[in-house]
Length: 358
Image 1 (cartoon, rainbow, N blue to C red):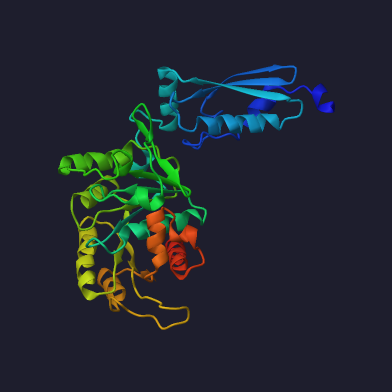
Image 2: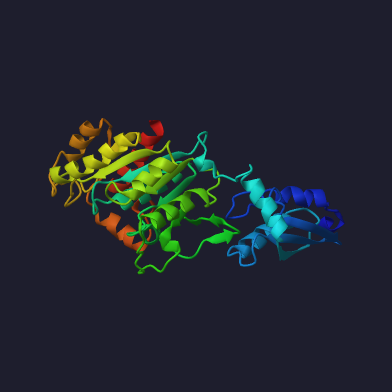
């Protein structure tokens, strides 16, 4: 009953609302000027908040967070949240705040960016490049990093399915908000088209899509951005090298010598466009038929070591053939989430640790 006689103030309410973040922009709703007004009367509090757009998909998350935070204050008996929508002028002010400067350039494109950009490459398809991208990204996130993933394999996009995420991204004027899953911020052409739709584009359209992903997506403050490249050494790899000159490359191969030779071409391309190769990952290295059994080298041995010597980079890990990896990819639950103590998951975490130490 004593709480009824306590008078809460607007300043107290505004202070606790600083801890409420916009779930897409990852900034305080107070900092983003989303709190329009606060009304207090006899222990009843009304908060008028502004959404960036009328169709905000996470509006209930914002409402629940506001209610919960304000209700914790002594003297508050009831909380009402009234949602409105920003005007065009307010949205423009928001965009200016998120991306200051005359051109509102993405921080990723700045030569002073602190985000580590890692392109995951392979010489040919089918070596598990996307699997490595997804599991390595989640492993980095679970090491406390803020991580984004760009699915740059526009023709053969697979990140949405492997991450178990679907839907369309929110667009605030011309700024695209990435979708999120497993602690990652994600962008793929698969969020723009139906899953089974064929993307039939020539080079200029491909270039435009990728530059859009890098320059018009609001990634926020990222520690790492992983880019799942298409196989080979074509337009996409060149676009990434030109747009993000500080990018590094991780090459994925399988053990057989034929795959190593093809993967070496990705290394040669990296050399020509001045992209450092930070490491090699050998996927499908061996199969363990039973716990404690001798490994079976279905695809031979030595490919990863050979490629590492050829490109002058360390071999960061050998990932076994593990049905759990395939199952996780099909279900949208990466193996580092579904079975973090499995042998394959431990290799992914070891690769993440090696990258963080390098």
